[in-house]
Image 1 (cartoon, rainbow, N blue to C red):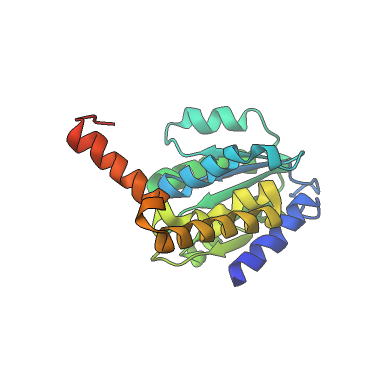
Image 2 (cartoon, rainbow, N blue to C red; image 1 turned 135 degrees about the vertical axis):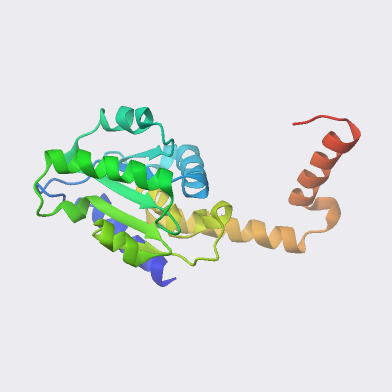
Length: 210
């Protein structure tokens, strides 16, 4: 909850244009760099809720270690108005750090050194490593949170930046309702159970691989 409050305050700063980059301009683009759970969940939810995303702020998601992915993304945005979110539990993931270093070089080539940390945000269970990398703000989550379950933690920061904290709170509330449904619903009405049983039926009885 402490981290959630800080995420909310930060998302308000960015969305209200109070958070400024090295040249004093507000943020218009957020580039989330991660892989696996630090990319897939936030990217999926952001796209699913794109109708609720605030105009003037666009989130981009980069996970591919092939430099063409990051290069294509950066080619369409302005370094002076770009915020890079580096999401990595350990802050040692090679693919993520390779993209983060490339993004840093892109920013350093275009912007003054002073204020550079305002362009980097760390989302990690190793905040000291994010700070050493040059992240001006870091949002932590527990090291026991698995990637596929991390959307609801600080890993969901791009979603909060896109739809605001109120929308993110509604997302969390919906997730809690689904958790309660799985735990409490009768087997005949349990959506998650039926989903699992259907998968078993398709694979084990009908021989369908997917």
